[in-house]
Amino acid sequence: MSDIGRYDYAFDPDGEAWAARLLRRVPPGGTVLELGPGPGAMTRVLLARGHRVTVVENDPQALAVLATLGVELNAGDLEDAHCWDAFAGRRFDTVLACDVLEHLRQPEDVLRRLGEFVAPMGRLLISVPNIAYAGVVAALRNGVFDYSDKGLLDRTHVHFFTRRSLEKTLLGCDWTPRIWEAHREPMENSEFAGYWSALSDAQRQSLLANWPDFDVYQWMVLATPAVDPMAWDVSEARARADRLHGELQALMQVHQHEHASLLEHQKAMAQARETLGDFQSEVQALHRAAERLRAEKAAAEAESQALRLAAEHAWPARWRRRLVRWRLLRG
Image (cartoon, rainbow, N blue to C red; front, side, top):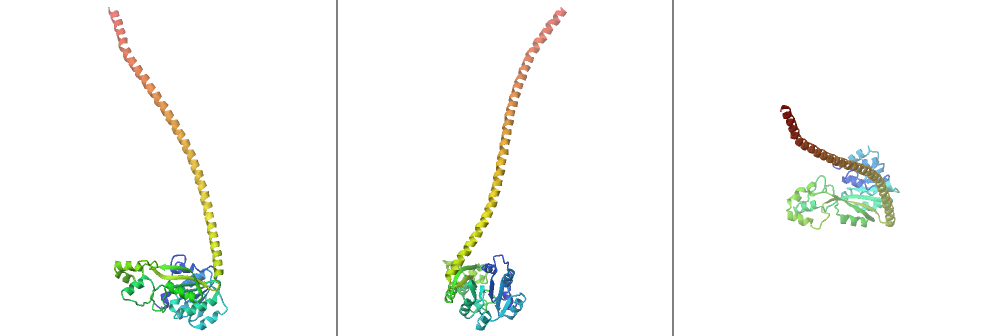
């Protein structure tokens, strides 16, 4: 695998992959300055969504791939002061620095320069590995801190962050952290699984006690320039109100549909109750008719029994009369 191949990956833009979650923080339709995009896994999605994308990249292999995508290219080193000359006077709605700061020896210098290129009400979106991940601590507990070709301890990482240290860095560079999001990864699924399983249950429980962020593999932070926090708050409140209005409209449409469906159900239930009432009336009428038939049958059976008894009594008397008549005729 080439050096740049380590950073080429596919993901579902509408799924829950970390890259997809990051890109959901980019407002639609704006200009984007993407720092260190590699071969452009996220760049492709931004372009497909209609963003105008400018990239800064210094890897020749990545630049060759990016040149085929139709983006504005700047082949520069982020830590070279002259890299920023190409953007003099320009402003971008979103600046993406996803998995970039950990590769810089002086990320503070870059963060300070970026403030010049963010549009009013623009945003800086950052993602960094979390060196406080419990897997790293488990490896240290086993006496290991080994770099690798990829992952949290990628050998090209020269700077490490925790949430607290990143927040401190941003505040010191005139950025205000607004939104934090965590990429959580179970230790069993990480490159530190072996070190984690090598710990005893007691050691693992001791590490996890009162540590809610033990499984945060990466942090995302959305930051804004600290120069005008009030304007951002107003804009965010307005955007939140718009989102709530949209959600309300959607709920009303759902409610109207469900209300119409409920009315149909109520109508069907009323018809069913009416049909059931008619059926019950018919059943009751049949019961009454059956009772009459049973009564008539009982009366007929009683009459038949009486006739049978009468016939049985009448038969001997009739024969006696015939016998007397016969004797008289003989006599």
